[in-house]
Length: 87
Image (cartoon, rainbow, N blue to C red; front, top):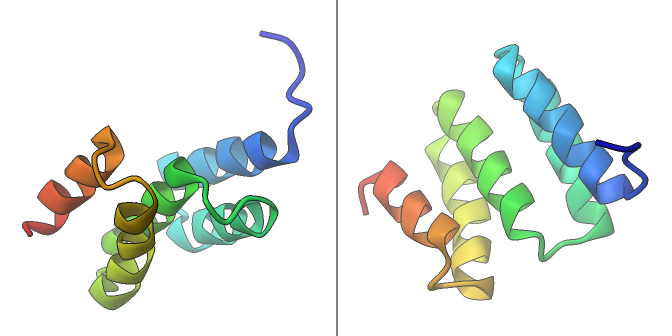
């Protein structure tokens, strides 16, 4: 794999690193920085919601996943988000 040049991707991978290290707050920061670049990124919306879910902040999870559902209601991540919340 070559160098990552897309800033949005950099924020995603940085967020994944923090998420896998269980530093959910830092993961959220990275995902939110990526969402400034692309507010319609369904992967960043999903991951941010998932990090908030790990922090048991269900209201913030729902905010991010509602945006995801609005943008891509039939996507795999939208379906997964609904299942993760038990909706």
